[in-house]
Image 1 (cartoon, rainbow, N blue to C red):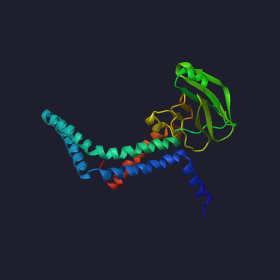
Image 2 (image 1 turned 60 degrees about the horizontal axis):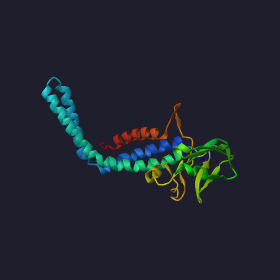
Image 3 (image 1 turned 60 degrees about the vertical axis):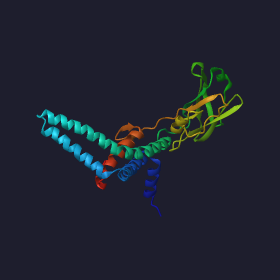
Image 4 (image 1 turned 45 degrees about the vertical axis):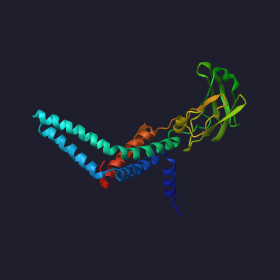
Amino acid sequence: MATPALAAAKLFLFTSPLAIVVVLSVVIGLLMIVLFGYTSNQKAIKVAKDQLKAHLLAVRLFQDQLHVVMGSYGRILRGTGRYLKLAFMPLLYVIIPITLLIVQLDRYLGSTGIPANASFLLTVRVNNSDAINDVSLELPPEITMTAPAVHVPAAHEIVWRLAASKEGTYEIRLAGAGENVTKTLHVSSDLVRVSPTRLRGHFWERVFSSTESAVPDSSPVDSVAIDYPERSIEIAGYEINWIWLFFILSMIAGFIFKEILGIQV
């Protein structure tokens, strides 16, 4: 049977954003190095790096001989180009999956759920200013308006200030021109997968910023957005965005595993 301490450790590991980022950074740092090693020409990269070191050493040793220094600089430029050519495809194999992973992780780590009884803004953008007065809001019983709607004709926007009485996952419904558009709302203090916005069209923007399906083309609504609070992770008394912390830790882990595994980067 699991001890209370072990159960608490597991709970911390799977619910603490800091613990999740640290573990993922170490794992991704290892996978980056291993993937780079398998997809690159390690012998050619080692030769290119050794040649660069030799040319840099020549610059220092013969700095009083201009023709030698200039020739070394030329060889350094050519050697750098050769090294970048050798490293480009392996880096591409590493960067693409990591970018996709970061997009998915940001749905959990980039923002927090809305706290219960805290006010938040719901912003609806319509396709023309005439449609502003045609859009109505339908709320679950647990969600209430805390201020009248604000209409911004110049921006084609309507802004509502709302609050939820208790935690849960809710659907906010917008009606206009005979079409209904829903927006999912997460009211939670736990780690949840949030979607700050729902869009019409904008395929690539939806890939990177939304987990919800596209708004129907027949609706006057262009987008629905909720201002989820941004998450900052506190470490050593400083607050930092999880992506910066992830990059720093994964790079450190990568360099450590590079030395351990003897992989040329």
